[in-house]
Length: 444
Length: 123
Image (tube, rainbow over all chains, first blue to last red; front, side, top):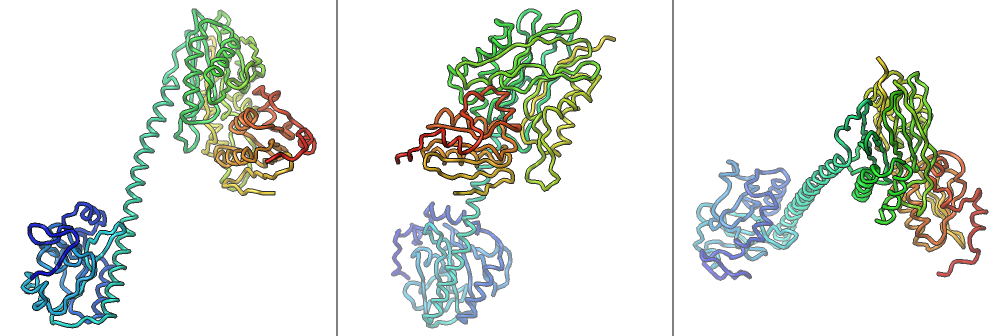
């Protein structure tokens, strides 16, 4: 036995060295064929090979470094994938894999390449013809072969058909490898997305106080409603903190856009406001400074904000409030009347000079100051859903909904508004929404 | 004239080029679902290197992203004129945010085009 030359040479055991090539073995592994059960798609091809050539047996095999795995041998009784494998040297398949080309034997006992081969006896090989199964990256990982009990001459058209069938097997395998690669890339992308979603959530949480600091003599509550399907960091933020002595500051802001750039501006805004609110009790002054800071730091986004600085008084609470491009604040009086508060002012981060004005406000027992971002006054039904068309839930609708909360505390008020918004947009929120309610508790 | 059917249901952007301007006519509503299309349209308009006229006559609703794009366009383009932003919720937004004065606004498209240099833009 001899006379076969392999491009990559031979191993110590005399078998082709390419059988142990790690790149080839990786392609074989990626095919998912090793140790796999028979499948109709392959059995059909081997049956076709037998009917075309009239050979006794046809097989599709996959050839590893030490074992050959018999994927399809429909003319022999199948005894399970554990049984349908043998040592790589015990059959002829490695010839075609080692040569990465056809291996054709007309008389196995007399052919000098196979005479005395250990596979002849057990398989009853009189003649053998096989073509390699080749992956898109050029590795021969198995064979499509036919075996006859007697010596015979293979006709050219039989070999041509066999080559075509081997290509069909290769195409099937390569499609599966592509699919598996795509699924693996998808899994990687999904894992990365999950990590980035976690990061976005934790960043968002770091930009919103988890619990509002209690303000002595006031009932405060905030609520954040995320847009439907949204996992990006969004630009809505709020804060409530002690500015100085008896003075407290409540702020609600909305940075245009989402994502990391918006988060950076949110962080800049929150910390600038906290730092400056203690020095200046005028919200207009503090927001003006924020505008300068955003311009100086070339903030990539603009923002709108409403800020109220207030203190409790024997009659309730009093303070000043400023709008910077933000929708007006609402005050719900104890009797249910709702009033808009604040004068239009310039949004922050765009203009070198801004026009901002403070207005004074007073809250009596039972009154509630309501700050919100524009998701609360622009709620729309899902545009991808069919009619009926509903108008935008605008500022007037919001004021009416707030009027209906008469007598409710801060948390219940926010909950009611959230429910009304959800009812309007039918569970599909087009924008994130933040709500902040500050109420002077009613006198007992 | 080029009309784009966008992948959403609510905004349609008609883009056409006049000798001295690129005109974007917005029809419908902007929102998170059509932000990419909106940004693409403005990006393509900027690439014409012509002054931009944005016709808001048919706009039902413009979100904060549209405002941001207009502010950005104002800062970076060779000229920006808004047509008819005087009514509707977007007019309220322009007023509320105090950036009305930033923009050159005209009530009709002919008036807007008349604001711009009439000679063809050199390419």
